[in-house]
Length: 436
Image (cartoon, rainbow, N blue to C red; front, side, top):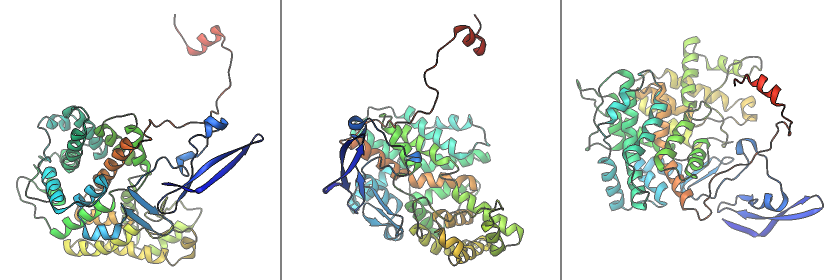
């Protein structure tokens, strides 16, 4: 970030002028630096949802929603998705550069040998209801890691915590699923890669081996890459906000998982599957469904199209569209949902109603179809999102803690309640139902 050629923005307030510097990011983004606004003018800004507020400087992820661009540390998402592994991308996000061969091999080895959970975690899972949604289970389990690893926060210990989190998250996720089924947990296997290990822990049983399809494992790995970071979204901002109090890494990531669980954030791909299954159960007609979606008097909603940031085709959706057909063909799964999805996309991209509203497929549109084909239950979709987003959350937490401008997060507000009122002790006691 640099000052934009000495430019500034002037605010006129009560007969006085106040100049605030204009700063420019490396991709040409412009922002007004208002950190001194309140001290100089007594004013604050009001921005519900922080939709127009830059909360930090960050060198991790760049998004241009108008052009459909997503880059991690400068690398285009389509290049990383096609050529990198999830653990290589995790290293890139956390350390800022792609690893050397020796660095990547060492990282993979450390992650592989930290995948097991402490034996006492068995009691943790057994104490939870079997019907519990896996997201609060995962959030609680990640938070509980802080009780097992309570070392002082030296740089070495932070790096160890990072490895443990990335290593143990698939195990925690798989165990939460096995617990819901009443099946025994499957221990991780050190000879398997990250995604293959997770698939085996999810779907194998002690009675029979689970044959891992390398194409499916590679597609799952790519899905994790596509979800690895996405700038200052709700869950990432939550991780930063909690971490700004100097809460440890486990507690901060646990808060991010809880934020992601919200239906407006991480549950969109689940809603896509519900929509596609509804269309299939009715008459299979994407055309008739979209006619209802366009009717302002109808409650039917089109899911998986449009994005808070992207006003163009989500670059991640384009990659998944290619993978979708291959996985379904490979697994011999029903292609009905995919056929409906592709017909929906074809109609939406040619219909003026949707074109005017700039509704393009997003990453959730095809990811849910792939997860469904692999055999993941819909409750696990958001857990898979959390697994993918984990290195991004870690990178953001680290960047915030190392920022020279680091300070605890503390938003302001515009108070709209009652002004000062007198208090009648007799009336007050009666109205409160107080007992002496």
